[in-house]
Image 1 (cartoon, rainbow, N blue to C red):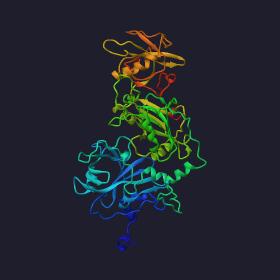
Image 2 (image 1 turned 135 degrees about the vertical axis):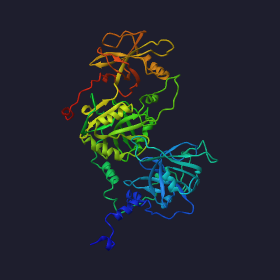
Image 3 (image 1 turned 45 degrees about the vertical axis):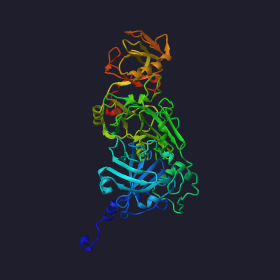
Image 4 (image 1 turned 180 degrees about the vertical axis):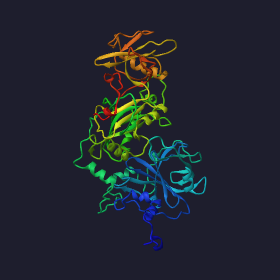
Length: 566
């Protein structure tokens, strides 16, 4: 039969038309037999454009900002909520378009559904464009200026699309209040918690869930719903116990990068290694030595909102990322407790870069292949400024290493794609450093010369069995604050004798010895034949490593045969 003459539609045309429907993604994510959310449809534009802001406690608390445009409501998830403080930027992640009917939705989305949790109509009203005459066109340009006329939000606002950070998923924008008569420098979102529809706060809605408009259907949710399956597994009576005593899997240093399709390669993140156990009632954050890191990085409590399934146990690196997404280890040092008299700086924001998943959906995943664990981990992350997924490449280790060198990064880590998670050092994971760098134990310091205050140089070493062997003095890499901070930590550790097992080093100024408890990160040019560091530079203290574990790192040569050895 001739399809053209018969008028039959070519295969796939109906599917393609459906994909072009602006609410297709909204409908795809929802089972309307199991959620009270409106199914909705695209409608003709209103005479007055409307907006709504819904406070929504799903996996994490956020505010959904929606503007009417083209018969639907383009939407952004605002993690910290809108503000009337002028030019105070709020990260707003673009989400799927919602139907116009959604602007009046308030209630509870049941567990197992996309976006499960309480929703209130936090604010609503009308808006007008301040620039241009078509909101769809302005959104496409990546910059939207508009005037809100709501109950809480009034005046001129801007939405500006920004470039995603390296490894960030989704489409980030910034929402902020422009200067005008409605700005309020003292405005706080938590002081305006009630719904403009019902007068209830989100907490009151949560407390009265029995009376909340929860959809109760005799039909089960869609059998292929990923969220439903995860919820069922996590709540199953047969769930595996959470591995609360897990310690990190460590990589073996090797002398050169390589290509191998059986391996995946990641950037080596420059920060503090940590394993996080995330449950509904809180977060446990432990260093590789078991030290509690949560008191120092309190913002990591937000990890309870950063994953689509809890409980979950993840492995990663706490990093401070600069404007280009590059880890800055020295900026991480500013998070240490300030010393009296030291300049106080605003703490740098910390990102938890995660690269492995030990437990999720009620399953202990440590015996599963690495590639499977990483695939699940990426699916479970909720895009947020607190957590970031560590991407990888398959096979191309040399190319990634060259990229790391050009970018001034620490190096790369190679991992066998099929490797299980072992809480030990393994040849299934290897690291290749772009610069010579490792940790050293501080065994003493010298008195300063000239106008320098604090100390002159650190005297450092490493363990060989029970012997602490001297490796050199580190006299550069400090600023006024780090000199003060280090001096304050060293003075209480002073002792009369050298802790080094070999001959005490000769110094240009008198030496002071200390108990070997502090660990410093040092970069250097090379080792001399005598086993002394050349051109060492101090980078910072390691709060996540035990002094007794510090040894001289010896890079191994790896061949195709040894790459496959366990």
